[in-house]
Length: 475
Image (tube, rainbow, N blue to C red):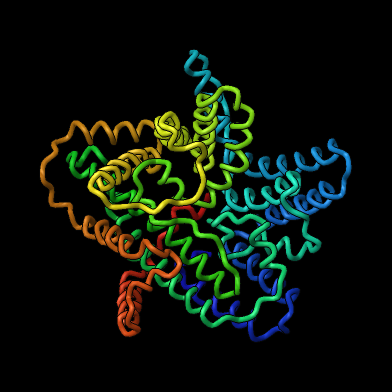
């Protein structure tokens, strides 16, 4: 079920009324509603793949209990690896089976050997990259002594399948979300109002900005040979804004929807295009994934490579970003995209400006030199996203070839530039507080006017016929 669909606008009020008004106010009943609603939300896309979520949930719940109760290190490790193997096995088969088979065939072709390899028509399950990471982190945290196992399978299942963030995050840790799921929630009017504001803002970013820009990026990336270099340059900038408004719009809707049910999710974006280098960028972009990779991928490697000094840190960071690229998609162009970001990190390590890929966000000042660094960082990120947006390595290189060999002359294709600039200006004014962005409007009537403007802008741009899937929806 898409957030930007008619079905969701029917589903959400019904779930809200059932959750708060039609059942006894007990935690167990609230979690039954959450679980049933979450499974229904997911099954609306394809009910058959619910079994994957259920299998992952049951195995991780059982593994967590045995890891915690066992006094033998080997037994703990066996159940930890059972959880990891199950989650990565499910993810690997559905997302990467064809990719590895085709890569194996292509490797032999380079040696002049042609192999007849048949690939399967495997459907990529909705949100599989997100819920497998979220569920797996539960057992890893128990194994590392950071968490005690849940005593309720119902609570844990509701944590794994919580519908606002099931499909595209934020990727929540059990230590933060599970206690909220387990306790009785009481309706908080102010929290619900904040949720509705975030939902409105998320829909504005998705429907008005991202979906409008997608019309242009689909045309430009679809046939770059037909466009001037200036158009292709702008096209890379347009896609940078499109993916940001699309994904952060989803996160805003998810966070806002969770608030309606008395749950606080972590922030996933904190104005990432106002950053002076790639380290600051990743501390503000897809924060839940960055922190996950930092804790479960980068840190173990950094510890193992610690005797190699800064080279070991660089190697751990680079490998982490290669894995991040592969997580984003089963294609070498995604791996290259991740590798580019890893390479951009290396100078910062040697300048002693970074030792990890996650951490607290720093306030950004706007001196002239900072503005120049922001422009450079935004340009580098936009260029790297060409590999993310392209359908293949060849398509990405073709895009750059036509960008740099085509005439850099003024072009009439500037309409989407208005949307790009508007989003950056809005982010600039709202950058102080991503959860309460409308606080910049001090007068109540000014806020109401903004709400109406955003609402009618979304209503005007919304189209059932042109319904656009979120970029990260089927990951």
